[in-house]
Image (cartoon, chains in turn yellow, purple):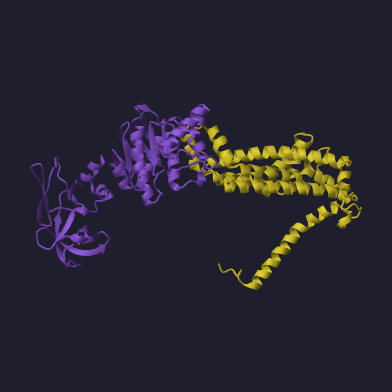
Length: 265
Length: 351
């Protein structure tokens, strides 16, 4: 390897750039978490003696925020269940398809490239025409289009660990199609399924553009947070953000842990 | 209990490509049968159709005379040992071996017992809880065998299972196949491109080329009476000459090669062979003018013998393996020598 890593100057420069990139990416959210533990009203880092969970406690009284959180969790759960099931079916179909594979892959992936504002608008126009009153289900519909391509990609990637000969061998030993799916394919792609669940859930939880068109009487969390930011925020939103951030990190860590354990086996 | 296999006018086409071409073959119950051929000869396609992973374009597959052509793989009384073994990586040794029994919903205690018996059969009892990834290549091979044999199949299909093993392990596993065949009394069908494997294991074998059977017979028949030059070369008879003349003489043949008269005993056919193969390990070189005149073109030292390339009068090349102490004094490339033939050196090749 002669890409210059042995050169001292090059190493220092690359090290500096890496550190700078990491700071830019990770510092703002960490700052936010820090702010959420500051009991003062003005957003700033707390001094060590002042650290307090005041806003986290206060959060329990914020009816509007909590209702939005509940709505968002409901939508995220529905989106996750449907998107992972459909993605799994789509990935199994991909496994069976011959020449049509690439076309199928693109077809399922396509919604990822449609801008959320346009997709949300389009869906809301159609639902309006069919006289569907917007509710959490219509939001989940929009989120499904956003989450499905990601879940599909993650599950499909994990399918490489399913060799064709495993399925032939299972059939050879008497297994029906259903047994091959449940006893051979599913156990081998568990990391992909877990990944699909986490992706779908987080993508739905964060989604803004599509939600803004499709939402019913109860706003989702990102919509409420955005509204509150504009109308002079109560620091409870920092507490809520911190809570969501920490939950996300935990979820991703769990996924990494599971797939690492898988690889070792 | 072993099943017989009937291949009745079976063809398999992939678009324009004919992988198996109107093939007719009868494999007897309980025999060790080998399909020998190079890659692309159609031998693996034929095996897939017997296993039920592929369907013929035309023709029928019969087990014990009953048509199974449209029967799916999971209902056929045959099991396959795959080239890549296809052991399930998320299961232990016992779970792999017991998978077919679990699918059959046998009682847990019966499963445990049968798995133990199968592992005993391949010398791996006690390895039940091991991880597949923690096994050596030879051990994985045995697990794959046990996983098939635990099903007590009437037919065991072996799809080039020895590729990827080193030479010593290949020979060990080859002996293992022979032993297991005797013990289980099932019909074994082996697909391979290795003629030594085919010769040493088979009761009967078929040589495949371009989707057709070139010759079917016992290893002995194929080695001593190859139907044509392709078969002769495939089983290692590389030195093939067109004799000056061939005549029937009593119970044998009189052959004239390079002007010298010699005999092949025990030839009973009516049609005379067009070519003669000379076994490289049955040739000698002599100083005199007793044998067939030939010119030494090349010689390479191979450890225990010299590999000598000889040119005949019509420039046909022969390869002779001359043991180190049988090499005449002063022999060198470019010199004319006299080729002697030991008993059994000549093999008639029909076309």
